[in-house]
Image (cartoon, rainbow, N blue to C red; front, top):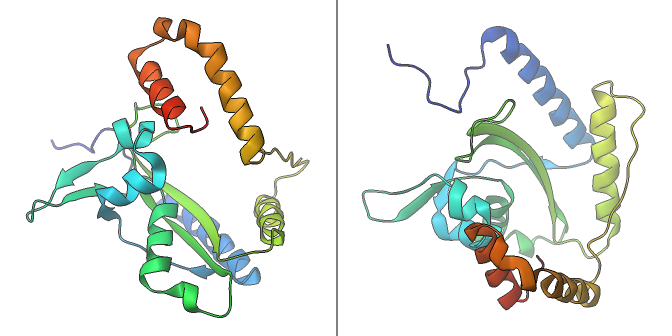
Length: 208
């Protein structure tokens, strides 16, 4: 008997009803906030994710489903949604639309070759929003308020929103330098993946 591939799941009729309820709720809320649905291909050029996600990240290095098509092009099943949405925004010249920002949302299957764990699958569904072309930071506040609205619409109570910050470019540079100084003397004691990440990101002046 042929069984379902490892790391995937069948959504049976009883659970499918629950999924449909959640999707309908999300669609209604997105309409309220004037976000439009976008549907991108489940596979894209591998370069899109290598550039958009970062070619040194675990997602790109270890977790992507990548293969060559019959034209010998490197193709990847999408591991996340943002890169494809931005690609579509640029390719279809949405930046020329006078009504900026362009508010888009997506909901669909993503694929990552992860170690199988409870509640984590190699094919999983992801919902996300992108407000592209905004110059006013108020759109960030709107997204935070929208997230709380989504949770509340599903009956979740006693929610607390805690806002963090990654800092500005100057403070992030100082923080990165402090991390490098702290870990450099002992990095040889870490795993090879950790050493690679440390060397790549510190040399490239990225945040660790």
